[in-house]
Image 1 (cartoon, rainbow, N blue to C red):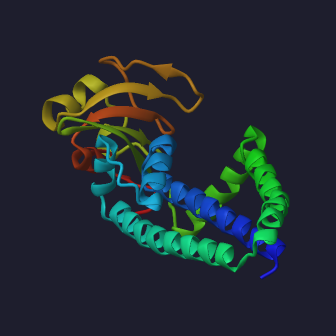
Image 2: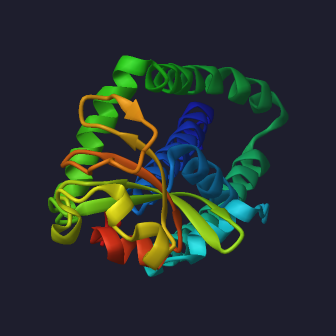
Length: 235
C-alpha cells in the first residue's frame, strides 16, 4: 500500500471516529442530557475505558439512553479492533525506508484534520452546525411542541431537571405557585425560572407559570414528567 494512501486512510479513520463521537453527543443531548455530561459519557463508552462516575446513572434512567449506550459500546468495540488491526497491518507492510515517509505523508491529512477540528471550535461555526443538526434531528424524531425535560443531575433519590414549558398544563394555568400543590402533593420544588425574554427569577408564592418559561425543579423524575406533561426530546 502506498504510504500516502495509508496515511490518508488513517486520518479518515480519526475523522470518522470524531464525527461518530459528535453525533452520539448530539443524540444524548436530545434525550435529555446536558452537553458536557453527554460528551464525557460518549467518550467513555466509545473508547471502552470503563470510566464510571455517578453521572453514568443518568444513562440508565430511560430506555432511549440505554439503547443509545448499547449501540455506542458495540460500535466502539468493533471500530477500535478495526483501527488497531489496520494500523498494525500498515506498519508490518512498510519497509524500513518507508517508515520515515509514512510519518511525513501523515502530516498533510493530519494537518487537514487539525483545520477541521479548529473550525469546529469556532463559536459561530459551532452554533451554525448545532442549529442545522438540531433541526434535522428534531424532524427525524418527529419532535412536537410538547413540553420537554432535560435531566441535569441526581441528588440522592431525587433529580434536578429543567422543564421547558411550551404549554402550561391546564390545572397550573393562571394558578399561583402557593396554590399549585407542587411541593405539598407532588414533592416538587421549583428552584428557578427563566422566562421567555431571558429574565431569571427566584420563584415566590405568587409566581404564575407562563408559556416559554424554563423551570429548574427538584423531585422524582417520573413525577416531574407526569406533572408538567413533559417528554424527553426523543420520545
